[in-house]
Length: 159
Image (cartoon, rainbow, N blue to C red; front, side, top):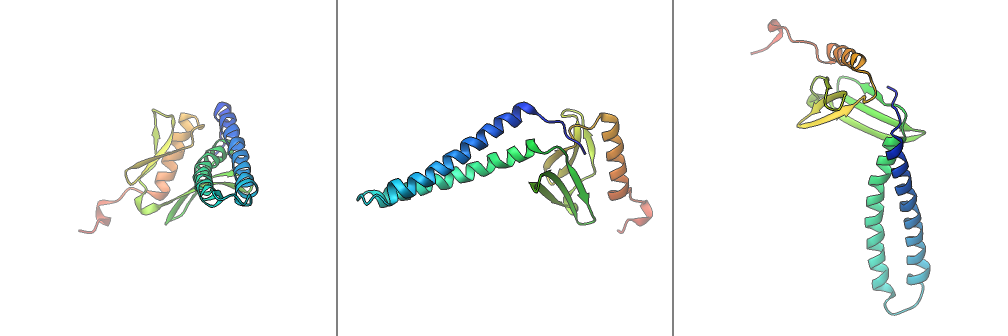
């Protein structure tokens, strides 16, 4: 499914990724060459503090990196089989992939408030297909529901 770019968010997250990478490189350089190898008596503890800060910076950067990939992707790919539903947003060879166990996925529906397709995964609503027009989204939801969530016949139910 094609996705329209949200340029404001893409630019914001591109700037944040650049700040993150620059901060990570500077932090590693400063920690190793300026502090750890300085020979000062406080170097060990200050290096330990900087390594803790770098770990936190790295973890926060992974969140920014994932959002950057989300807004950089120009399409969504939906893979469904009997056991797993996968939504993939490829960015070159990278990209984010979300996988869901079909046992906990509810039938697809059109979510009017956000104008996208959605399904419930447990108690969480998962949105996708934001840039489909409402007609196409309704048709896709009906087609997917016919294939993966067929209506149960009264005769098929086991009591």
